[in-house]
Each structure stands twice: as structure tokens, then as C-alpha cells.
Image (cartoon, rainbow, N blue to C red):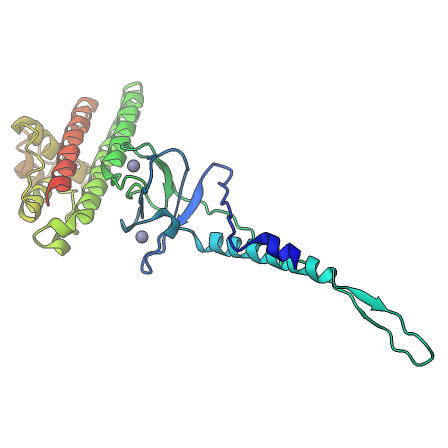
Length: 318
Ligand SMILES: [Zn+2]
Ligand SMILES: [Zn+2]
């Protein structure tokens, strides 16, 4: 049995990265078992690092995060090596005794067979690639938001920053266009500001909802109505995310969010509610509200401030 003995009792199987350099990982928590990928060598370095599930935040040793496909692959390699060695060993026992004499019986043993095949796998395609702002790990997830698998930082603020950067670029394009086209692009930029901030705000409140007065309510705060979101965040977390802005900056945020509400629901035409909510002196009831790139740029700056403040204060609220 020398082939089999030579294999020893321990196997070390390396999991190779896919063509983009990523290795698949799977959360070990039964209710989660979600799939993500990361690029080895890009994040934290050191001993005893923990791995974080981007989706549920579960923290565990990295060797708990092998995917089912990787485990099947590793098992099949071991099985293939063992069966291969076994076949070779059995082959050394082959014999063939020819029949002798008139009534002799011939007897032989011939070993045939192949080692069991290796079960290869392919890593899956994912939706969003993130380079963590905090530890520089490259990772890929389904959806958009998640915790960094290396340092555990949630990426909601980073995603908001990226989206607002895109809005800035969109405004630069708009400013170079004739006015009718520019107007559409500026209105789209406003829509993107509001939806990015809404996505960011909801996700941030959901992730930190365990620290809220009523977690279920905190997880349901919507940010399209920014004034009521400010109020709800105050009630739930005891935090005023707008205290980094002065009164006129906050008024600008309210006005822009209200304009977006008009665009989305009233074809941009000013109604009583808008005038009440904004005290916008330039607005005329029944006329289209005007949106220009200067105020959207100011909105982008204000949203950066609001986002940083909300993120920082919920992270350290505990
Ligand atoms: Zn998980
Ligand atoms: Zn990180």
C-alpha cells in the first residue's frame, strides 16, 4: 500500500482565484449563507484576522467562509488522490496463473478503474464591486450595500459619496448643453441626489436600528421627505443629522427635496404644499418651479455633510 501511505493523512488544497483575481466566500450562518467574493492581498494584513459577512455582519474565522462548491471541490480532490493511489496499489497485486495440466483452473486478477473525477467549479458573477475606503479591500457583493469582509466597515457612506460624485459629473455635462437639454439633465441630477440620499439614509438606519428607541420604526425611516426624516432620526437615535448645516443651507435642502417631489408627482408645477413647506419667494402657484445647476451643486455639498454626520453619529451611538 505504498502509494496510499505516501499520501499521508493531511491534505492541503489551494483555492485559486477566478480570472479577475477574486475568491468566492459564503456566510456560515444558516439563515444567511450568502455569497460574496474578495480579492486576496488587497485588504488588511496580519494574523488572526476575522472575516465579516457583507450582508448580515456575522464575524468568524476566515476558514468558516468556504463556499459549498469549494468544499465539494476539495473533497473531490482528496477522493481522487485516494482512489488513484488505491488503484495503483491494487495494480501491484495483479497476478495471472495460467491453467496447468488437463484439468487445471487458471486464475487471475486484473485491476481496472479510474480515480474519481475532480468536481471543478466556477465563481459566480456578482453585482457591485467595492474598494473599501477604510482598509482598501476589493470585494464584490449582490446589491449595493454591505459590510467590508475585512474591516467590517459598512459602505453606505462610501456609496453615497460615489453617487454624489456622479451627480457632479452629470451637472458638468448639463452646464455645457443648450437650455432645454440642460434642464432635463439638471432635473435628473436632482432626482439622483434624492434617491441616493434616501437609499443611504434607509440603509444606515436599518444597519444601526438595534441602537434605536424602536428598531422596527428606525428601519422604516424614509428620506425622500427630509424634514420628517430629520424628526424621526431625532426621535429614534437622539441625533440631529442636520446640525452640521446652517439655517440657509438646511432651507436649501428642504427646497430642493420639495422641488423633486413636484417633479416626480406634479410635473414640476408649484402647489400650495410646496409654498407652505419651503417659503420659496420666487415660486408662483401654478407655474413650473425652476431648478438650476448652482443650487443642485449646493445640495450635493449639503448632502455630503448630512451623510457624514448621520453616519458618524449612528456609528458611535451605542
Ligand atoms: Zn451572513
Ligand atoms: Zn474594509
